[in-house]
Image (tube, rainbow, N blue to C red; front, side):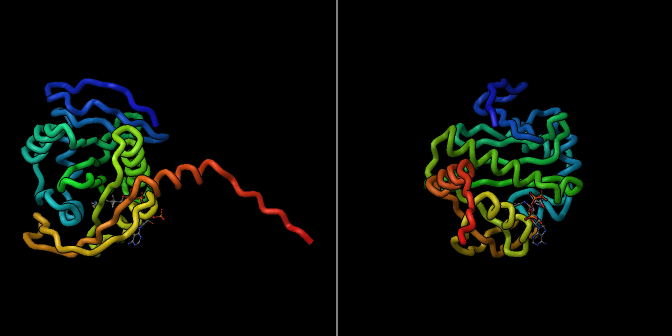
Length: 203
Ligand SMILES: CC(C)(COP(=O)(O)OP(=O)(O)OC[C@H]1O[C@@H](n2cnc3c(N)ncnc32)[C@H](O)[C@@H]1OP(=O)(O)O)[C@@H](O)C(=O)NCCC(=O)NCCS
């Protein structure tokens, strides 16, 4: 993953990072992305598995969301795009409490099941620890959302608790698995990936 500096068009420049992975580019949203974002996010399955995305989700919702992103210098929002520029979803880091930032993400349904969320979250995790030096990250997945929990587990997150969270799209609260990734665990996993084990058979 490399990080490049890139200005944003017509929006505050508090978020200028671009994260690159093998298949993806994570970059700040721009107002011209609103139509694509609205088309992808107008899906009950996305709304019901995220805290604040409304359903139905229209162009105005996308424009409002884009205009509101990256205003707090500590929060970062990225669009998840393929390297050919095709926008597929969004992810970000948000400080909802004073202790550690929380990771959130969603992808348009046509892009599910191809490992894109895992690749994007890994990039975000690397960025959070390597570039920001955070000590821990948090994330949540509804207990009815095993795919999201699996993404987090594949990125090294460990379950800590279940709490009730208000979900805007269902106008109600629902149980959410809370997961956490400590910097030390991430660091160990990265080192582990660089070492190899040789097995020798002895008579
Ligand atoms: C959750 C979401 C981001 C996953 O995106 P994705 O690109 O399909 O995820 P990945 O392909 O990287 O990984 C999905 C994993 O979940 C697994 N999975 C999918 N459906 C599953 C199910 N019903 N039960 C258990 N595991 C499941 C997949 O097999 C895969 O694991 P594997 O690689 O070990 O096989 C996507 O479904 C989404 O945007 N959902 C709506 C919004 C949302 O839930 N956001 C997260 C908020 S916490």
